[in-house]
Image 1 (tube, one colour):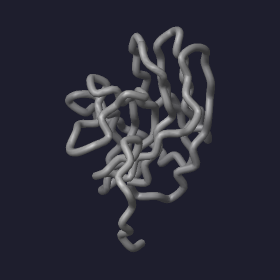
Image 2: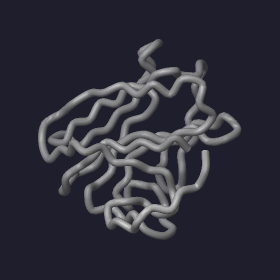
Image 3: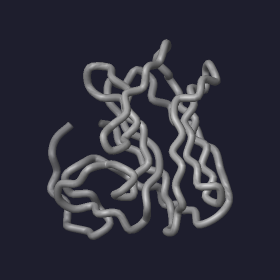
Image 4: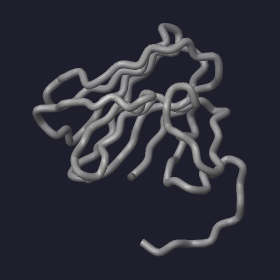
Length: 135
């Protein structure tokens, strides 16, 4: 809860609390689930390995991010440009992410209900990492 000074690192985001997974993909497909519980803000999805991590940037596909967020105030958004608002009947406590590099798809699901939330389609040409942010 307290701001800490850390050394600069080219792989570290300097203005946001985003984290890229160590694992990355350049082919194939996979599925994972993220427990978001009662959090009031979060972002999750995937991002290109070569994304900008320094300074101000917009989280959107044109900048190498394919993500879904819960914003403060309870609004779910697909981080397209401009953002797409997503109406959900029930607040997911766990979100499933299906990623298919070859088919160029990232899909999000509510794991409790099985409801499809959003799908991005893209021709990937870089290593792709799962991305997480607590908000």
